[in-house]
Length: 128
Image 1 (spheres, rainbow, N blue to C red):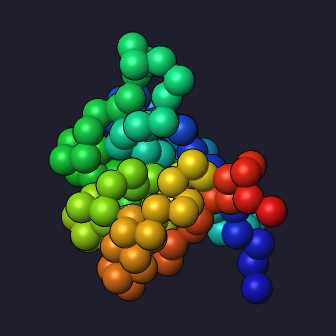
Image 2: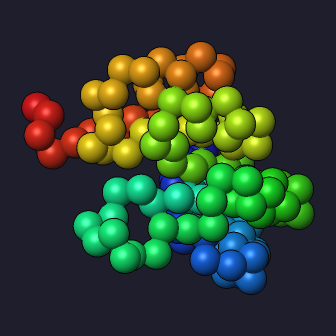
């Protein structure tokens, strides 16, 4: 089994950045024989400042990620922050990620699991 890694820009900034990173990930996958799942978030709802950049939003972000998947053939991972985001995200995304500070939000975890997609639950520092 090939090693699996998650890598990519933390939050979607532009189509150009996504494309440049995806191209490099494909090159690394091919050269090293690994499996890197492309990760970028359409929204980073867990910023420490209300004025921080959060992303491009779910509709535009999922379209941009779908374009990456189509062009480069990469599997995709993105964060979801609310239960209603699970279903639309699962139509494009291969792995739904639950951010660490939302890992105990039962409705969010159940909604993600109900999509049938892989769910990556980040472990919060307050959990043993």
